[in-house]
Length: 305
Length: 283
Image 1 (cartoon, each protein chain N blue to C red):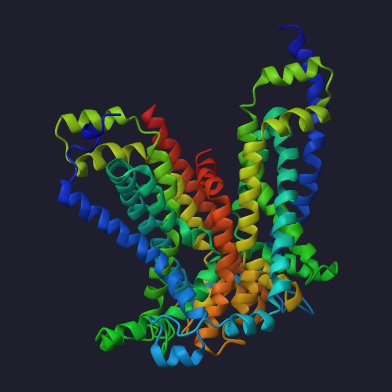
Image 2 (tube, rainbow over the protein chains, first blue to last red):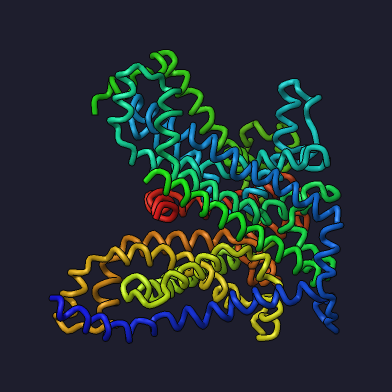
């Protein structure tokens, strides 16, 4: 056996790299070159047609002093709360409740039916979810305002997306609704991994459901927790579709986010160089967030071992 | 599993009902918007104005659905989405299989860095690629073609697919590979006649996910597909808001038309989807 393997490995090694050629060609053409071009464009002043003027770091300097960009940055922080922080926290409670309470008391069928309902918005295109909520929240004859008037709460009816004071919070609430299903499904799958003996032992010792949640479920869900939080945060940085469909960044720029601001500069204001600078910052931000997560995650795993 | 012990310390019987009620309330809240859409999409606007959004329709009317369908040529739009998502799903799985075979089974040198590159490619915000891709598409006469969208998403989805499949294939049973080798199968035949059939469950999950992810994409199709006869479902609906739609019931009809295909996929793929979420996130 030992004499066969080295020869096999060497001969095999020769054939395999060829299988990477199609991916390599396509990746260079579709990802690497455009990515490099975007960085290059961010150092220029360019309208998309005509002459390209090299301006060095001037777009980035402008970015630092652009109040719209900073506002969009903070709006995106709000979107991260709505798409990552709240759904992850809430999702863990919902998943634990469904898995070890509803599932055990009322049967796994009930639990998976409820899970399917909660997951439903996740399979829809974000743009379509935007259409649905834009329709529900229509200022004059939308469902929400009509219902509020019908139940005598007419004073609460409001142009939710049209008022700069409420627009961002309304978008955030919609995003929580959209995103919740993803953590619930991942956590419920993860909970099947937890050894039931842990819960049983704790229950025999008289630990309440709440204490078992904190001391058993939460620590056991650590791997899922990182993955969910990371994937939701990255999704939140790319929340272009709901913003486009719901508010187009408005009213004013009260719901603008860097992703949409870059689009506006590319295709509406034709300030391509400036748009490229925004897109580059967004890319760097995404990579920093990812690296930070991976570092923290591997450090925690290291502690456990 | 002894049931009484597992639920001991949980709320009592009456409390149990209350918890169930809270969960049902949550589920209703999640589904309610879809219910409202369905309820109102089949009303005439006169009916809506007279009786409001909560009342049942006085008569089922497909007028709004039909008008909107014709307005955006929805049959064509639906076909575009099926064509683009289908081609991307198949193409991205093929590309992932080839790359992951080299990385997971071939263990090519530098595979760790290749994987990191794929992961980064998958995480890059499309905002950072969109303008150059738009420019290059114009240069190569691929602007406003479905082919451009297919190529770009095949690459983006396969980045994730390669990452996932490589770790699955690196655990591929070596004895099976040895057996194929002893039977005289070369690298190429081993891939198609041994590795692909054995990995079918994973490939099915990937196919499903790539299809749905591509179906749901918005930014790049919005930029690339400007003419109505090339647009995908989310783009056609997103663009129609505010452009053609003035009527509140027609907006409901447009939402319904966008929801139905997703519900169909959900019902068909439900098991694959929930299984796949776990495969995808906890490799």
